[in-house]
Amino acid sequence: MRKLTYYISATLDGYIAGPGGEYDFFPFEGEPAAAILAEYPETMPTPARVPLGVADRPARHFDAVIMGRGTYDPGLAVGLTSPYGHLEQYVVSRTLTGVDPAVTFVADDPVGVVRDLKQRDGLGIWLAGGGRLAGVLLDEIDELIIKRHPIVLGAGIALFAGPHAPVSFTRTGEVSFDNGFTITSYAKSSA
Image 1 (cartoon, helix red, strand yellow):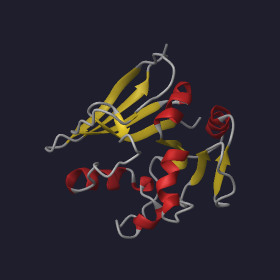
Image 2 (spheres, one colour):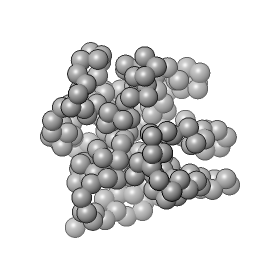
Image 3 (cartoon, helix red, strand yellow):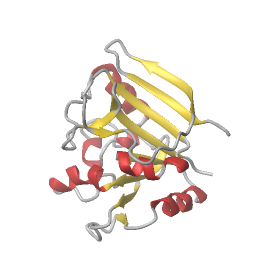
Image 4 (cartoon, helix red, strand yellow):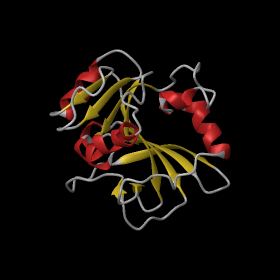
């Protein structure tokens, strides 16, 4: 059965974006960027794959991506209607429909969509954001991969937003870099 992995950048204080959805304070350079490109090439947007030198690299972890409207909107604002054309794409939104035939828009029941995707053959499913969608899908998340930046925002879009519902995860690995950046993996703890 496929896994749902919340693979996301976050600050030290647990934000994935600023109060207005900004994320330009997350650097993508040096050793951390090289490590991400080597291990997770499929997480690069389609137009960036050639300039980043990963256009021909096969997917290692994910062949489907699900995201909320807030995660989809920055690309849409610059005319990018199919940001991950090399993956099966799902956008959860009650207001957007039919923007691009390569993207499946989910108005209701993202939990049901994820459960259906988990039953299909293939690589993993990447939950790309945002915090509200992660809160809705919390019970379906099998793995967390948090790219933690040594930055404190003080306010913004939380890693998870939803009702109080403790779910335990166990750390399964971590890669640290000299600049304080870490990539930490967690698996959902068994009950």
